[in-house]
Image (tube, rainbow, N blue to C red):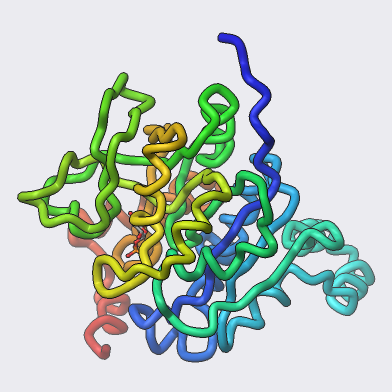
Amino acid sequence: MSTKPFKPVRKAVFPVAGLGTRFLPATKVMPKEMLPLAGKPLIQHAVEEAREAGIEELIFVTGRYKEMLEEHFDHQPELMTTLEARGRTDLMDRLKSADLPEGSLFLTRQPKPLGLGHAIWCARKLVGDEPFAVLLPDDVVQARRGCLSQMVDAYTELGGNLVAVMDVPREDTRKYGVVDPASDDGRIVRVRGLVEKPDPAKAPSTISIIGRYILQPEVFDHLAAFDRGAGGEIQLTDAMAKLIAGQGFHALRYEGTRYDCGSPAGFLQANLAWGLADPETAPALRDFMDRLDRGTIPRSQDKAGAQR
Ligand code: G1P
């Protein structure tokens, strides 16, 4: 297939101003994006996925009490010196994994929680007039090739706007932005409409958006109207729907499994999935799951649960 020279996607926006109330009290002083998934904060998973996809500029839309997120990506000279003195190059490598190239992290703030669309609009000056990606760090995708890399590949063929989608049970459409498909080849869906959190009875399909987007800058013109949508919030989905008439809009069924780390159960499932994928932790976890299945966990371990 011939590839057209679409403007490359160099920037990514990470909305991280949310309060994380579902994880209280863990998130009383710590941003929910700092919750560790297999030893790495959720935000680092998202940042690594973006960098793997060729993103050069990372834009955090932050809010109050979120400073820890910026600091996480700072160089940490004192700790580095201590680890070097101890000859712990293994730990130095782990620490370095959170260093970003100088001048690649940009910050803006969302002063009021008016919705995802409003958060993205707050990044308009930093994005400027070029296509950009959006990654919601709550959504983590376990995949051989990162979800955003897969999207960038598809974007190189298709241009326009692109969202990552998965098929959900019909009763779950009220949790997602849902696609009205014009055509669907099993991988790429041509989009003719989008609805935010539709009632299952009225949903145009069960093809649902996960927190990965590649968008054209014209979306900011629609967001600027500050129209309120589902839940009284300024919805990104509503602004995207207005792009469909004038620009290409596609959805990609990515390869991989998405975990909703914004929900306590999804977060635990993700930790289990990552633990099982890591050869260091997998054997002990498998053994534990096996004993859970057989009901042979020693009484002493039951106690912690009983005391809660
Ligand atoms: C947001 C979007 C929704 C999307 C979802 C994916 O909803 O508004 O369209 O399907 O993320 O996680 P939220 O989960 O913030 O309510």
